[in-house]
Amino acid sequence: MNLNEKLTELNEKGCTLTIQRHAVLEYLYENRTHPTVEKIYYSLKEKFSTISKATVYNTLELLKNYGLIQEITIEKGKLHFDYEVKPHHHFFCHRCNHVYDVDVVGCPLAGKKMIDGHKIEEMRPYIIGTCSKCLKKKG
Amino acid sequence: MNLNEKLTELNEKGCTLTIQRHAVLEYLYENRTHPTVEKIYYSLKEKFSTISKATVYNTLELLKNYGLIQEITIEKGKLHFDYEVKPHHHFFCHRCNHVYDVDVVGCPLAGKKMIDGHKIEEMRPYIIGTCSKCLKKKG
DNA sequence: ATCTAACATTAGAACAATTCTAAGTCAAGA
DNA sequence: TCTTGACTTAGAATTGTTCTAATGTTAGAT
Image 1 (cartoon, helix red, strand yellow):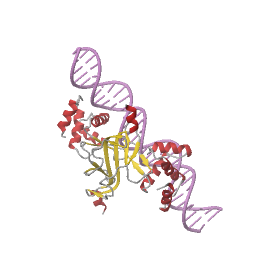
Image 2: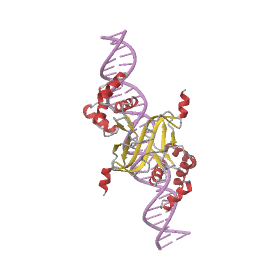
Image 3: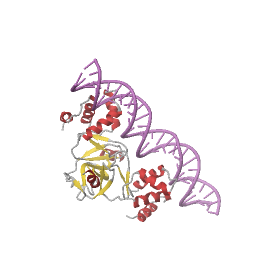
Image 4: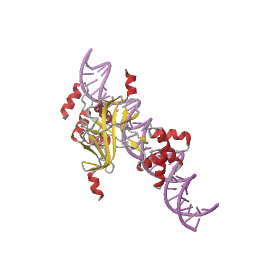
């Protein structure tokens, strides 16, 4: 789903399309590195010097609630965000703190709506380890 | 793996078995509710009134590094811990903030050591939604 | 085009979770 | 007993997130 499709969807659902909301979504569209809130905030500050942290947090929460972006709680104590909402796994390298996308096929939970009587609304399959780049550094 | 086995393993690996470390591990052994650090700290305070937060954090980190307990980053901004380290999924209810164990068989990642050139050290399969108890409350 | 009410943004304070620090305690070996 | 190193403590500091009150913006009604 490209940027314009998401912006249109937001608009059609009655959400005001402010310059800040546009900027946050566009930033995530252009930066598929699973940035933290801090990273998003300081990057946007370069273009929009008066943007506030509260707006960034509010906007990320809003976009998440519209199902247009994904929140990632893989790193202890800080949030990352992902433009891509299609189900996929995330790999976190505890050496460089980088989040990678990984594709895993054949997940038995795919498409399931319920488990043990609980209603499934979101999947967050996280994998922790050392990434290929950091493995090379070591040796 | 029962409590004594874990304590013995700690000891054999040369780790000093202080009363605080014993207490933290025992608390997790007896409370399989995936408690937060705050919960662990205040519960232990009742028995050991001078135990400090730093010790609880240090001990949880130490036990985690020995592979004896599992850290859970399913809830935004706060840590939960689990005595059980055998691979299993966690379900988080965003209404009551409770963490449940769920068994999922047939995970294609089970036993895998590598993915996309990254070294897998830990799996954290999280599922978010509304738990069976909260579903009943609603209606 | 103007008004207005609802909504959005801002700056910074407040809050919550975690980590750090420096002083004190404890245990084991010389 | 003294020393050394490891552990714990209390509280300060830091970090990440949320709240607040004032200000700014928008869309719809007139």
